[in-house]
Image (cartoon, rainbow, N blue to C red; front, side):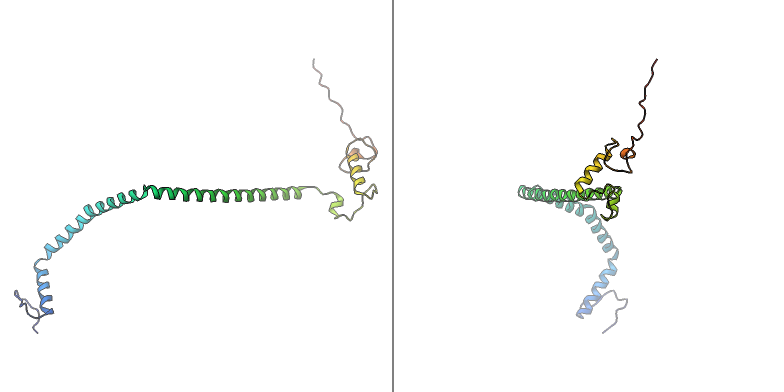
Length: 176
């Protein structure tokens, strides 16, 4: 087997090695032509074929998008999904409203001033010595009326004891 050297003519015999030698010689002789041909093919592909294929793909996509059977099935799906979203939003809104009410109720309960009986968890005894809850309620109501009589002492209402309490003077505006 002879080595590949500076021969300008190559014998076509030799099987696979002969074919490889012929190909290498062809590439050496036509290298710049091949480079320019590949560059030209690339530019044609980028500037002509790719935009044409993209336009063709877009036109086919628009045909499929505007197909009446597809549009009707998508509208049905869209209505179904929107109804489910509305139900979910209503449910979440109701839960949020319930949570807000509960939080507001807890905040009001926390801010509320408890009566001495509630503070002691029912272990205390009322001042007027009534044993029934209804009579206790009646006496508390009458003592908060401000009439100064009868129901017992209420520390939050100074006139609830057996005194007349403080009454502010009526203000008279004198106009001349």
